[in-house]
Image 1 (cartoon, rainbow, N blue to C red):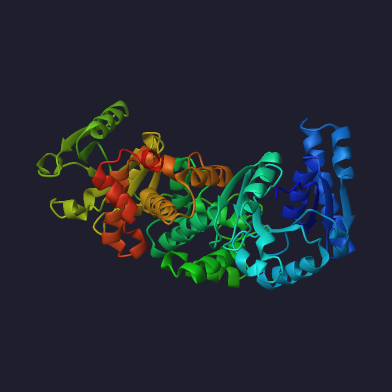
Image 2 (spheres, one colour):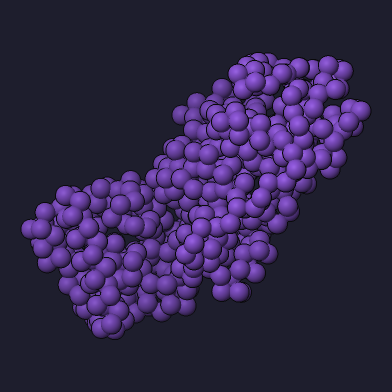
Length: 502
C-alpha cells in the first residue's frame, strides 16, 4: 500500500521539533505541533516565527509566504488532536522512558493507518516500536539541526518494519527537499556512529598527552578542511549529549573506542557542557584568551632534512626562499646532517630510531606535512624544547600552521582519520549501509568536504591499510586493525573502494 502523507503531527517543539514542523509546512503540508504545556507551546511558536522571519530578512521567503507557512501549523497541548494525522514525528528529549511512554500513547490515539516516526539520534527504534501494537508502522526519521537548512535525513527501518515503508518515508524526505539515507537500526545509525567514534578518539589522544587541544583542533580543521576541530564540535554538540551517545554506542558494540573518554565524564560531572553552559573544552566567557609567551629557541642557520622524493625537494626550495641553508640525508646514512642546527625527518611514523644514530639526538624532530597548510612537528623523548620551538617557528615562516605532538605512529591527523575510515569500511562490509549513502551522510550531516570513501580513494587504499597496521602495532587497539575487506581489496589490487562498490 502506497501512503499519502498530507497531515503530519510533530510532538515536541524545541529547536529541533520546531525546525521539523517548519520543514513540513514549507512543503505545504498541514502540521499539528504538540507541546507539554502552554509555556513550552509559546516557546515553540516563537522558534518558528523567529526562524521564518530570518528567512524573510534574507530574501529566502516573502512575508506572504511566511504568513501562509505559519497558517498551516496548528499549535496544541493535547495529544488527542493527533487522532487523524497520517504521520507523527516525535522530537522529545533523548530518554528511552519518555519516548516509549509517548509512543504507547500515540498508538492509542492515532488512526490505525498512521505511521509513527522517531527523530532519535541514537536510541533503538526497535525498542521504541515494541511499546506499540503496530511495530511494523514505526520508523526512524532522523533530521539534523537546524532542520530547515540541513539536507540529510536518516531513515531507519527495523527487522519488523513493513516492507516498503522505509522507501515511502525516503520518498517523503525527497518531497521535503532532503536527501535520505536508509539504514538499519544500529546505535548511532550512520552519522553519530562514525562521528562520535572519531570525537571520542580525539579525547583519548588529548588525555594521552599526544598533542594539545588547540593543536588537535587546528590539525583536523586546517589539515583536512573540516568545518571545525573535534573539541570545538564537542562543545557545540554538548558534552553531555556526546557522553550519552557514546554510552549508547558502547552498550551495543562493546568496542572500547565507544566507551566515553574519562575526560568527557569529568566535564559532564562538573557541569561544564560546552557552549550551552559557557564552558567546556573551551571557555566562552567574554575576553580574549591569553597567549603563552614562547619558550627559548635554538639558533638556526643550517637545517638538516632526512628523506627523499618531491616532498624533500619542495621543502629545500621553501627553506632557501626563506633564507635558510639546507642539507639532505637518506635514512640509511645520516652523516650529511650530523652538524645541522636542527634535523627534520620527513615521516608519519616514529623517528626516535633516527635520533639515536645522531651525535646530537636532541636536535631531531619528525615532520609530517599535511596538505598545504599544516605541518606536524613530532618531538621524541630526546628532542630539546629549544629545537622543537625553533622548528615550530620555521614551519610558521614557511606559511604552514605547526602542530606540536609526540613521536607516535601517524601523529595526529592520520591517527584520527584512518580509524574513522576503517569504521566506515566495516559499516559497508556488514551490509549496514552503502558507500554512497555513507558518503552522503557525512558530507550533508557534518558538512565534511568529502565522504569517508571519497577520502579513502583520494589517499589510497594501501596507504590507509599500512597506516592502520602502524597504529595497531603502536597502540594494540583491536579496532585499529585494518578491516578484513580493506586488506582484501589491497591484496587484490583494487584501485579504489568506489570501484569495488559499484
